[in-house]
Image 1 (tube, rainbow, N blue to C red):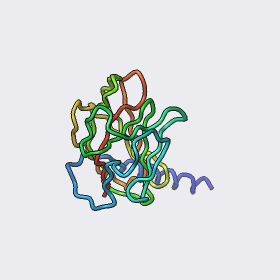
Image 2 (image 1 turned 90 degrees about the horizontal axis):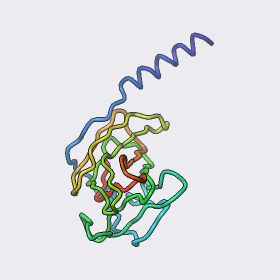
Image 3 (image 1 turned 135 degrees about the vertical axis):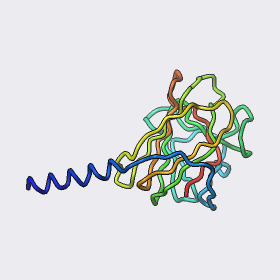
Length: 174
């Protein structure tokens, strides 16, 4: 039994040591793996399907909601974009993927977040890695490639008075 535990510990340590998140430039994706939140009615949501039913978005935490619409008239692609209003956001897929990206900026709500933190999890819900980048003031492409494949990503707004407030549009996976 002791040998099995030692072997299992070595295998897990080897897998974790190779888990990485790399920056990725803009990458091609095919419908339905591009989502601009444009098929949703403007409003507040605790969760909704994404990528033609191949995934979904949900708030992190039990309070507040994700806001879909064109608050401040800043949507990158009309009519909508999305941000967590007082909550952070997670996106989970049915099948694991290698790439995640989209256009991000500070939501126009006066909360003043300074950083976006992305945390990627594999299909066993094990953390692959997390990365933090400055939150841009205007729509900016931010993309990532993971090893191993990711199945859930958490997106946190850091540095503001409340969680969330990371505006996102044209989210894509591959």
